[in-house]
Amino acid sequence: MNDDLLALTHTGDDYDKYFGAVVPPVFMNSLHIFKTFEQFADTDPFDEDKFVYGRVANPTVVIAEKKIAQLENGARAAIFSSGMAAAASAIMATCKSGSHIICLRNIYQPVRRFLSTFCIPKLSMSVTWVSGQDLSEFEHAIRPETSLIILESPATFIFTVTDIRAVADIAKKHGVRTYIDNSYCTPLFQKPLDLGVDISMHTMSKYLGGHSDIIGGVLVSKDDTLMRSIMSEMREWFGGIIGPMEGWLVTRSLRTLAVRLKQHQETAMEVAAFLERHPKVRRVNYTGLGSHPQADIIAKQQTGHTGLMSFLLDAPPEAAVKLINELKLFGIGVSWGGFESLALTPLYTASDEELAFLSLPDGRGLIRLYCGLEGTGNLIEDLEQALNRL
Ligand SMILES: *Cc1c(COP(=O)(O)O)cnc(C)c1O
Image (cartoon, rainbow, N blue to C red; front, side, top):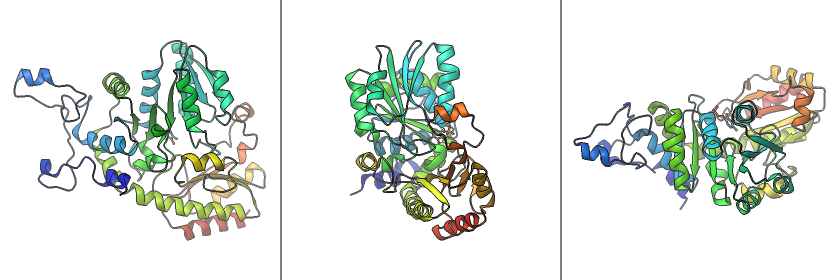
């Protein structure tokens, strides 16, 4: 029995409520009314079957929340209008003015900017930036005022990983909370809460939405009290709940997540192997390759690999730009997780200081590839013709 597949396809279904419809309706309403004042006064907005007002909770959104909570083995999930709304809410819920945070250097860049241009100057927080690849960095960085460790594994750019259980153990020993961006793996290929992490976050704009048609994000935890404060304080006060239509689209998309990921993985494995063999390619960064320098940690905590990778050509950075311009099937763009393949040189215009901060001296020529659903043969053919033109 695969519980994940049952969660994706059926958790949250309640056919009796909706005339046997296999697809639940979109509750496009802001308000729920009551027969008596007593019923109104008795309603706990945290109750999954009671609703008062759309900024607090929505019945369509709750269906997708039940699926994510089950997939991550969490107590409760809260869906937001974007991944960044979820990320900022998690930081606000776990930190306060003066808090110290330990954060990965190559964290998703808007999270880094939120910390460095908002949390540090406006809320007097402080941040120690770490590579995430050496456990002693975490031990040494912890201070009495440390509130949160922020992880992303695999992380943006070269897909380095962090030993999640080991960091969660260190954090617990010191009473520090942990947060991870689990968007790359999705709950199907990595379950950080089971490894001891307090909060797992996903952007729903990528694989969970899966069709490049929605923006959304989610937080999930095994800690019911923490989720209550995230939902009834952060989400309610900042007003960051996802809209009913987007919430409905998330449920639509989750039903096919497992088959989509299986295909992304199969294609990316073949694309990565093709690139690794190609004489014009210097190095390929993909968690599915045996050559990944942290393959032992990956084997401990990931049960799969998805469609994202990066690689370096054996040529100056200008060649990387020429290559992505020559690609016909891979669009040039940010994001990933949809049906369409994408390519980008994300650090081509980065400053020397930025590349030094990220410890990516060769970063300018880094090409990020996202393998979509156009077919493995078609994508490899496209890469081959573009490489031949260099
Ligand atoms: C896109 C992305 C986010 C932010 O999600 P939004 O829905 O765009 O706000 C966070 N983390 C990762 C890894 C992402 O790729």
